[in-house]
Amino acid sequence: DAGITQSPRHKVTETGTPVTLRCHQTENHRYMYWYRQDPGHGLRLIHYSYGVKDTDKGEVSDGYSVSRSKTEDFLLTLESATSSQTSVYFCGTGVPGNTIYFGEGSWLTVV
Amino acid sequence: AQTVTQSQPEMSVQEAETVTLSCTYDTSESDYYLFWYKQPPSRQMILVIRQEAYKQQNATENRFSVNFQKAAKSFSLKISDSQLGDAAMYFCAYRIVQGAQKLVFGQGTRLTINP
Image 1 (cartoon, chains in turn brown, blue):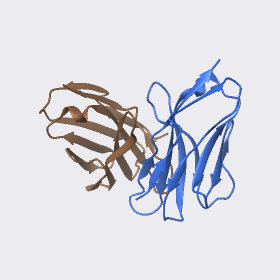
Image 2 (cartoon, chains in turn yellow, orange; image 1 turned 90 degrees about the vertical axis):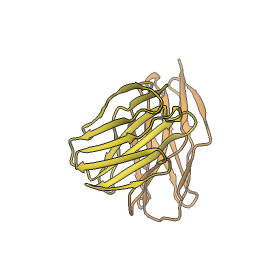
Image 3 (cartoon, one colour; image 1 turned 30 degrees about the vertical axis):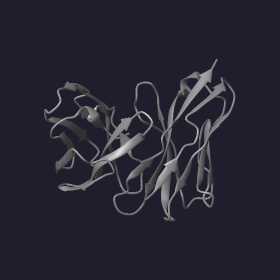
């Protein structure tokens, strides 16, 4: 399994505040992903990266931005958090043609 | 767009029995990968098994095996000799080979093991 660390693991924030989630990997994987998990929806892709400074949108990208300034770190930012962004966020990493591995998840509550 | 469907929101099985979880997918690609992930109450996503679309032989990992029917776009997971530790959410997922190689998930099946 890839060494994937997500931080923070749990966060409660107020509506309208900015929030940044960090994903750090130690396996030098090219691809990194941010997913959110909500009841009844499985995991849905927010944004992904296929290299340093190369990112693109997933199916639920509205209200989120990402940055990848170095291979090991992929940041997910909620510019102005809303209650609909209360969710569990998973970071995944992988190499072409292989399994994607996931971090332990970040629980975000927006009140 | 690729989609993955798990038609069984919940399943239950007696301990030591066999259970099969269903998954169908929709794609126009010929080369791809399929996965089953397990998510226990800890919410960790754990890889159970993977299948390459170009391989005709069904993948097997100990008590876990798949029935991969490429023409029917079906990818079911069979768990033999079910154990209490198998209780979890199970997600079927599809990964395209080209481009961003995104992973597309089904909605999940919650598996309960009855002692």
